[in-house]
Length: 362
Ligand SMILES: O=c1[nH]cnc2c1ncn2[C@@H]1O[C@H](CO)[C@@H](O)[C@H]1O
Ligand SMILES: [Zn+2]
Image (cartoon, rainbow, N blue to C red):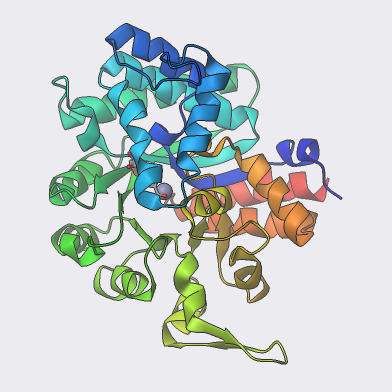
């Protein structure tokens, strides 16, 4: 059986990771002290002052069984990332942490509109993050490693800035931004609220993914694909609601599930996050197992490394333990993810042929 160390040594691809959900606990402490943000109280009734207690606090608070409560924890990471210095630091550390975990390609998302509280403009936010990504990539490569990183710009689904953020993503498309996303509480905020932004992106030949079918069911997935034209689905777990398995174990796909499988819509699945928000009862019962058996285009992701206390290697290891996956399965997930990336075709192919396949052969 594969060990966690084996998995760390394999090249991996990460399509769904939130920048503001991946801060190092120690960095949250430093930045909170710098900007005077008050962190939550620890067990002793005083604001938490050490990194490991803070890491546990995020994990426990996010372990809420509800997406809305899970999202409340972001108030702290967003509050401490309101300056170019903080954004650049967090972005650089993100790249270094992903590379240390064996990630060779990552698309990291965040919502620029949430980082304007101290007067930054949207463009300044994107520039600060890009500066951090560039510095991180340079540091990794100076140490002999390899990682390619792109930004995805997220609009918050309960707000009304999606058109502006979509235009921002297009303006930065040749300078490190590979696509667009919407996130936030799903119930009551269907993707069609942002139809103008999605239609604009389609006219611009731009790429986008939509958080859909996480806390909410099939209608949200259907809208994301058939009204909005999403290239990928963030989570998409509820697509199992359109699949029935009879007594003999034979699966029947409804029209929407068949469409998703037939057209190879990538599912950005995030096992730990889904257990934390109650979208799945446990890793072992996660729909990823069934969807993988049925050969949907499943990819494995972290969502929020801080809130989940996780890494991509740990997500894979949990799946190895729950479903008995082997090296071939992990290669399949990784190639699925690389094929689904918002990177030009020739660059995807080069990473698959020159980096991923040789490593899994060895
Ligand atoms: O799993 C998720 N579902 C929906 N929204 C999320 C999830 N994880 C994070 N965010 C939201 O996306 C924002 C930008 O990164 C975060 O601030 C958080 O509110
Ligand atoms: Zn997410």
